[in-house]
Length: 301
Image 1: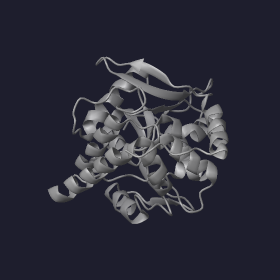
Image 2: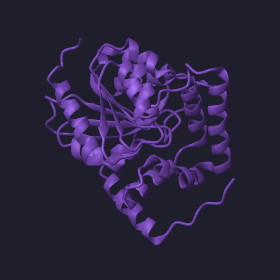
Image 3: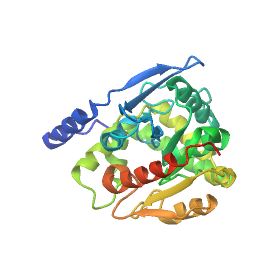
Image 4: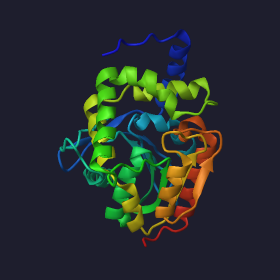
């Protein structure tokens, strides 16, 4: 496994500043009825009775902390929650070594029960979109709106050879590099060439903290999933957005998922895959607009 890279003084300063902002939204943990635990972060608004809770699901190389900029803005008007997916942070992994999206959606359902969230706006980024889509199909009464940011479609509809190759390549990369090496070599792919140093540091910080077992299970989830099939069966409110410069889930791929969901694709200019980190103002505005529209249609469909 590769050696841990040297961190510069500037990177230390950037990390310290980001962690100071994150300290406003400390990691919490809650036990579930199934004897599992989920770690999460939360921004609570004292006067949010008229606003639906917002639930944020991160991607494969990230965690709850990645949403700090959305906590800071959207937490002023509504309750905002972001989990560490099963196998991430202090969250109990799912039982299956090669899980499917419903394994994660079932935990999400239990977590919302434990938090007293009956109905929410659900946002999924990348791999989180796969979990969000499965959850929305299985528990439509709990989802007032489904917003997918740079959604990963999964390889469930591909040939067995393609699925196996994609899965095994990612697992080998994790084994060879470890979380720190993965962050150093892969985090830049999450952003556009225009990304600033703070965005680069934040993506790298989050990726360096993934837990190998949880990341490996998420890799199997990606190989097994077929988000387009779920979206074809979902009839609730849905939007899809992508960074214009996303090279991981490019606009053309997201356009196909938007077509499956029967909704136009929104494009965030000058942003890569992690648009909510790189272009926080534009992406947070998309989330806020979607949330406010969902607030106005609060009655279950």
